[in-house]
Length: 303
Image (cartoon, rainbow, N blue to C red; front, side, top):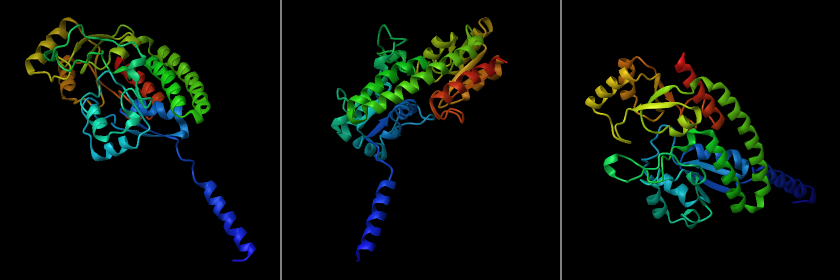
């Protein structure tokens, strides 16, 4: 090979090398889509995110398939809700994969529930009361103000684990926080007519949404968390709503619609299918779309 050909080959090789996208610094396994979306907002192209669940799955019950175990083995960081939402499957996953980086107590183990004020903390624990979580209701993602608090903590943790890119994560956090603050103000302005509106919930998964918007829960379709209603219970609930009317019944995208549709037909109130997390509706493609769609669907049900 003469000198000219060698230089041409070398130039081509260098060009190809610099054309390869930079490898993500951190592999993140998110237990729920909302935390995967938040990690992507804060981590940009420095992270590779895989969600263990999707919006149409009940996050309480997930099968630890081989593909999920492989992701857990290769993860640098785990981002989950905590508060025992994943108690039915995450401990098994961590034990079987044995990845030391993401075990509880390590920097790579992050629980969002640690950074918000928990609601519905039970005063006593009894399995007879249904699927009750000792640390409080874990569905914290339905209040965007909780996303703000979790984002603050998650940005710091990313900077701690990947110190070489700490400035990058801080910069993206500042940008996200400013956009998020503006979005919350807009959602709260739009949602003002929802304050004080009586609702029925299918599963007790919305206390944070109710607290944020001032919605008033008057009944739940599940007699106890995680327990399907009987015909007798539904009939009693129908009688209660005749004395104490509600404007709508709300459910998450992953909930079975049959019970809420039964109530809709008889109580003559609309059923509202909320995305509940990122990916729960066509519009909820990211965290901003999640709350755009949630607020709009609730407002539409008032018309």
